[in-house]
Amino acid sequence: MEKKSLRTAYGESLVELGQSDANIVVLEADLGKSTMSCLFKDVYPERYFEMGIAEQSMASTAAGLALAGKIPFYSTFAVFAFGRAYDQIRCGIAIPGANVKICGSSCGFSDFGDGKTHQSIEDANVMRMIPNMVVLNPCDAVETRKMMRAMVAHQGPVYIRINRNDLPVYTPEAGEYRIGKMSRIVAGDDVVIFATGSMVWKSAEAAELLKAEGISAEVINVSTLKPLEKSEILTYIAGKKAIVTAEEATKLGGLGSAIAEQLIGEVDLPFVRVGIEDEFGTSAHSYAELLETFGLTERHIAAAVKTALKVK
Image (cartoon, rainbow, N blue to C red; front, side, top):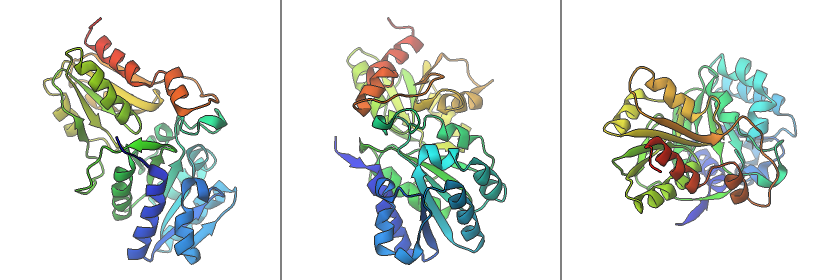
C-alpha cells in the first residue's frame, strides 16, 4: 500500500489551517525540522515562536497565547511534549481548559535509533489520565490532516500523537473526522481487533494472515483514545466471540485498559491485549526490528487472536 509521512501531513496542515485562521500560532522546541512545524515557519514567520529547549516555557507561553484568543499548536518529540512540561500542562492548560493543541511527535518506537530516552511508550497513557484532555492517535497521514481540522474546531486542550515513520494509508480522503468516532478498516465476524496508531496497519495485515486460516477478524481503528464512546465499542463487539486490542504503547493505562474500563459489567468475552510490557525500549537498527522485539508485528497480533479464540 501507499505510505505517507504523518509528520509532513502535520506540518502541511498547519500551513493550510493558518491560511484560513489568523489566530493559529505555532511554538516549537528546537525540533521544527523533525516535527515539520518548520513548514509553518516558512510561510508565517511572524506567527512562529522558536522556544528553544525549554518545553516548560513553551507550554506556559502556549497557555498565555490561548488566553489572548490565539489557537496555539506546540510540538516537540512526544517524550518531551508531556514529560518535561507535565506540571505546566496540568496546571496551565488542562485545569483552565485552555485551547492549546499539543503535538507529541516521533512517538512510540518510531525514533528507533535514539533508544529508551527518546522512545515515548507512555505519553498517550499519561495524557489520557488528565481531566479535560482529548487524546488522538492517527493511523495514517490522511487521518492526521482530518484530525488537525477537528482539533481547531474543538474548544479545549488536545494531544495528538504522531509517528515518525511513513505509514500505509487506510483512511479515505472523503468525509470529516469526528472526535470519538471509530472506523472499520477490515470487516469480520469472529473476533474484533481494536487497534490504534501504527497497530492499525499491523492489525490489517494480521487479519489477512488469519483469513488464510479461516478466521474472520474485524479491525477497528480507535484513533480517539479519549474520549471513548461506549456505544461505539458495543456496536463493534456485537456478535463477536472475542476481543483483542493492539497498541504501540505500554499496556498499563493504554488502549486495552481504556476498552476494558468501558466494558466492565457489560460483556463476558475473552480479552487479549497486544502492547508493550512494563519496560522501556532500546536502540535498534530499524523500526521493524523493535516491533519484532517487543511483540508488535502482524504475527503477534494474529497469535493473540488465536489465543483469544482458543485456536491452536
